[in-house]
Image (tube, rainbow, N blue to C red; front, top):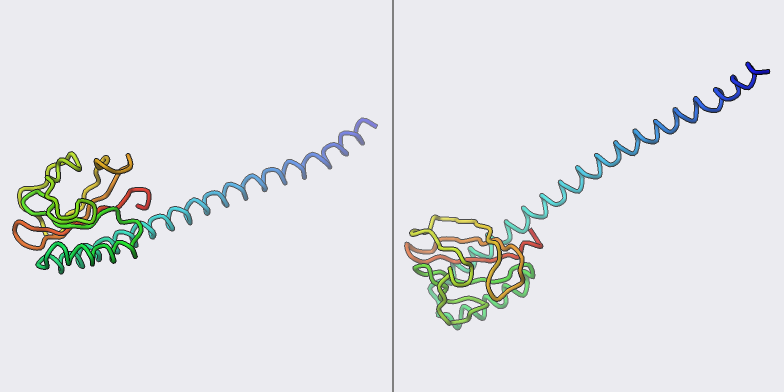
Length: 162
């Protein structure tokens, strides 16, 4: 009788334990797969936003020789179709000379960002900044494209999108 009870318990317990282990392993593999898919999606989205930001910086660079008033109209139109962009404008000798946020007023970039710019602008420059004055307290990413020796176009993207 004891042998029969032991056999019956093993007959039930062994498949139960095997099924629990199989379910656990399947769950772990599914979790790893989901993490890989999510990471790939986030990286692709970030790359797409970065490519679009460089494209907007290039478009702004082509407008560098126009008057600020005319440029602001085009920058407003461009910003309307790129909702993740916080600001688009121009830098000249470390000052923001014309931008969507500041308009035609001249601001020193360090006043808004708490960061000084390089002495000469590289062809393309990318930098993340802790937060900008007069904006939400979130990181921002600044994309800068050189226009001339002392002039560059910039795009500021809110970090919640990158």
